[in-house]
Image 1: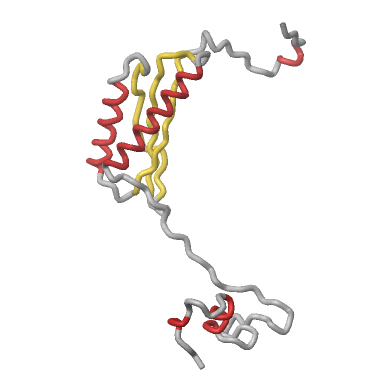
Image 2 (image 1 turned 45 degrees about the vertical axis):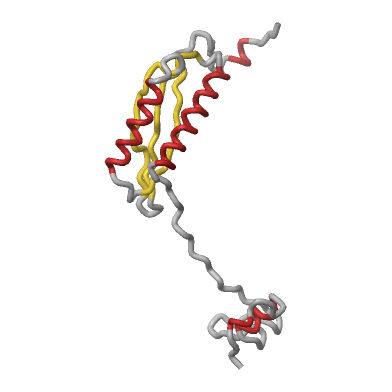
Length: 168
């Protein structure tokens, strides 16, 4: 038995998980912005069939909709919203069902080739200026008296960089 004073729980929200509404589960997926809309509809149909084929787990599929559009990052994020049969008090089966839905969603997206790949990020190879005698010249190609190719050869001990050519 635990005893709490009214003042300590006055600002808290007390929830009886047995009386709480049925659990609503969210699964987020990202697809490339170049994916045709008819493929998204095929994906949605597969998710609907998955939920309907498990009436003892899922009460209904509440929605499937785009939640985020990022054209610079080349993706559209969708959410699958489903209502579970269990109340939040019985959290174990809810989390297992959510994991099953997420795994099925991933497998369907793989089979339909709806994968999202991050765009490559630029790599900056500039070096900061140092105050010692081996300072890097940012305008030229000289690095402490050595050319770029010589610097790479020195870093790798000359092994495997013979194809880089010579600038001597």
